[in-house]
Image (cartoon, rainbow, N blue to C red):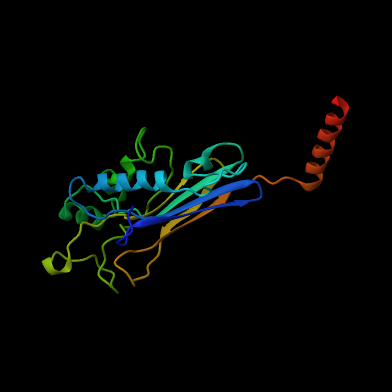
Length: 219
């Protein structure tokens, strides 16, 4: 995504027992003008294309983000960060729905929700139920969204900060936002229970012994 500026991603591939996990933390392109969501979609494509964990193929180890999908072992992917997707509503209409706590009405115009559709950038991904106010843009050290004064940098509130999951065996326990006021964003957090595959050492040794015996028999 380039080498200058504050946008980009960091990805981690790891395993717990025989289950492999991938975590992608990113900051996608900003902007609420028409067409800015296409820049974010392009960022997602570039992250997927340019992220390489193992330049030299290693048996059973994923090289890229979506290699974690395949069922060689059980694999899970978490994508999180300031995804920066906005709400396609006017400033006034968004504030009207926020005042009514009409999260469903806001989500109908949420750009990221549309990317969950078939053939879209996050087809197959899952997000928890959003039951909290938009996380951006707040005045610093305040409970208020930025006002409509030109100098304040007026923005239509949006759920810029998101956590998504991909893969089977993932169960979401909670999805909420924090109320820290140190930024113009509010942080979000998610808690998951995830199934992992673990070989029992004795069972694995018996399987190896049985396999060795078969090899000896055929020799």
